[in-house]
Length: 440
Image: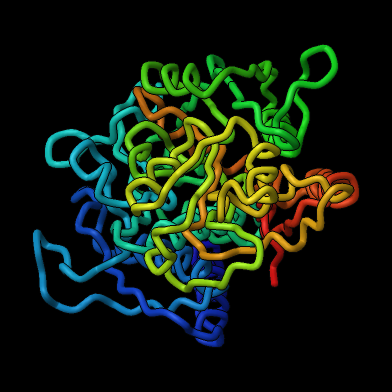
């Protein structure tokens, strides 16, 4: 009895601290939440309330550092769930809703069957399971929120504060579920979860400075360092291979457990990849010399001659926007064409301009942004086809730990200094991610 009382006090203390942190944060955006009606009937009403409190505390912790207000959804109900809820807490991930939500973090695992939907590819343990998540409904702009929250929760799951909260939750559930266990940051009511990574195949797209072939064929660059550190964190000894993008795409679409970097996230690739962790971001737009700035891409005069790389997606984008387009085989050739007035603007990024411009031959700083198109994010990604979702979570937890580590941050700082001093490439870093433009 005393043990149970002490544990309840711990839960109360942690939740009060989280709520205080939440209430004191500045709020720039408001999102609604609801508890999904997916928990098994075998869980008692008292345990369900404890599970809901525990789960909500985790979400509030993540949102507290992002200036996002969280409010209960209205009473309008669709399929037993408020229809305006953006966050759903303890929603079971299944084959029917897989593409409708961003799956931010797993919370619980329990035996499925009968009225409980099963989660596909959810481990090789003897018991077939359902995994419940914090899920965010897909909408415009929600991908960025989901990405950041997923990383924050993965970091939180490696903290003493989370361990304290989860251990208290375990004790609360022990009488009803004696085999419950915290595994991969998930409270499993059926014992140990198994995420087999022995057959993980790691393959890189060659990108200068990020993942390029060095001496004796070993990959070097900050993306290669990140992935190597993640594999070390997981005590895996897989070799990192490199291949052209066409082969990488083919393997990822046809095989399970293919870990790939760095992959630009696009709508077309959502059904092919799980997104483990962001590696870099790039601001894409039109760059010119002595050209006025246009707030909207559509306002740029269609008389502008736009240069792009051969076989680059931006070639088609420029054509679709009605520009006169010329394609070149390298960034150096593109910059030369701009300097020689063969094109009016280059469709690329600041990093590409810096890479293609020789400061000993031209004042590269005179090439400036004419109009912004978008920001793309390159990821460490995992093939979706028949890949275990627990392997994805194992990778996310390892990646979060690496990005918080002194070792990786020293590697990132050293790489950043080298890129600035030897190449003069504009960039800055945030949360372990390289942004290829100046922050101001």
